[in-house]
Image 1: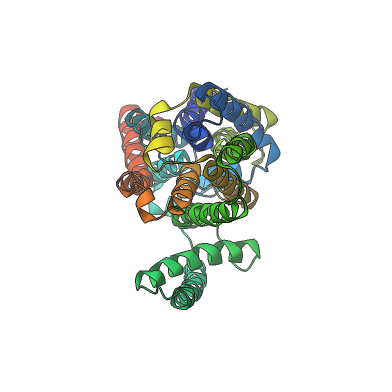
Image 2 (image 1 turned 30 degrees about the horizontal axis):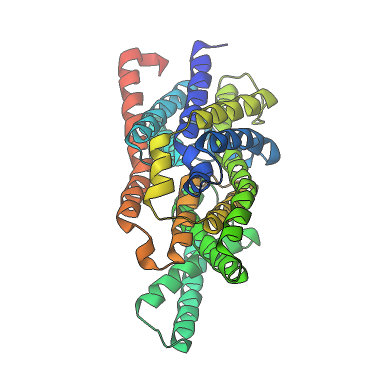
Length: 394
């Protein structure tokens, strides 16, 4: 096997390890915040279900990563290697700083940067104008319907404010586009799907968690507080397992897609089909990263966004796990960080606007926005440096 391919495989597994190190907070933040489990127990639970997740879902996301962002014609082992270098540098740097970023988006940015550096803008699968128009049409219809609905409800309650229209419109877009995708009316893939769900996944997590948290609070409103705490601390083990499986099923496929693309580019396989050993190795790498834990990220997610009660932790984990499971089925590589952060904000908002520390949220949002372009720039620079140093090899 070519040394470049061996190095690429090792780097892909290192990326999944770093992914688990940063994204450990996704699976266990709410469990630790509510003391449903000790930190060690929570990390062990997340590690096990991160390992099982990719075995429970399809490998559609691996296909999106491996052949849906950059045209496979331009994918060489060297290009993929430099894409991985840029992504790993960004994820490790943000993990050290305690900033929860999307490892999936770092990898996508790495592929974009290396692909453009190698073959120009034409190397990327950009969406067609017709698809963009379809997305805009469904988004506009959802925004209008959501704004009107919010205005009617707020007016009926006698609490209408202009910002109700903005919030209702955002919620309408968040519901309309996934619904159109699920029913087959809207078909999107590749970089467009990734960019759209940068906005939709945290908002969908927020809406789902807010609605579910409100419903749970209403149903159990007459329960004694101590009994309620015990009940939902136990239920959080289930919801945390669902969330960890969703995280593993989505993010572990990053390395699967890269390794399979590298094997295909190197002529070691004849078609894009993820081998079983790749699934197991990628899952194990992300589980080991999660077991070691990214404790700075965990602290920010568990303690600094909002104070979480056990029933809210259950609602947040269940909502985020449901969103991730749905995206795994559709083959959309969404950010698990975005989904759970939105869910934590959603359950916090059930206690009112001031219950959420929006300054921390803004810091996280900035990191989200920077991830794809930052990883792209780093990978592009890495590719150009390697090309200058090794010439024809690149």
